[in-house]
Amino acid sequence: MGLFDFISDKGEQKPVEPAKPAAGGTDFFGNAKPETSGDSYTVVSGDSLSKIAKHHYGDAAKWHQIYEANKATIGTNPDLIEVGQVLTLPSL
Image (cartoon, rainbow, N blue to C red; front, top):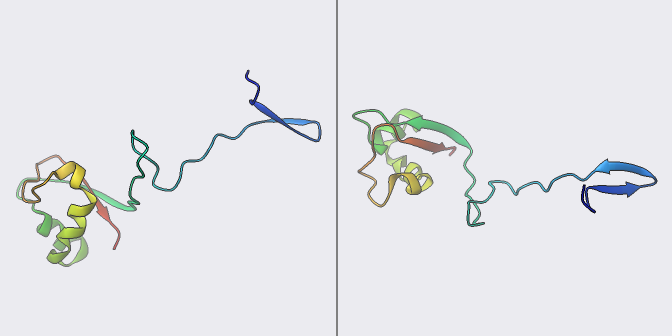
């Protein structure tokens, strides 16, 4: 046990609560992760971001929001999504 494992409060000892990460958390390098509250979707054959947007949001033009939320997974070309990729579908 370390020096800071317990704090004293009027004679009572209780474990120190671990720090809670900020909403969204951080990545390996300590950079803030964007808030992503929404569903996930696994890409199947024949999918495109506009087809996914049309199905989930009712508007194919909202493919940009899916792309922005998944740039790290998709890469620089939004036309090149691959079967099996798991995409986050942000709430709009």
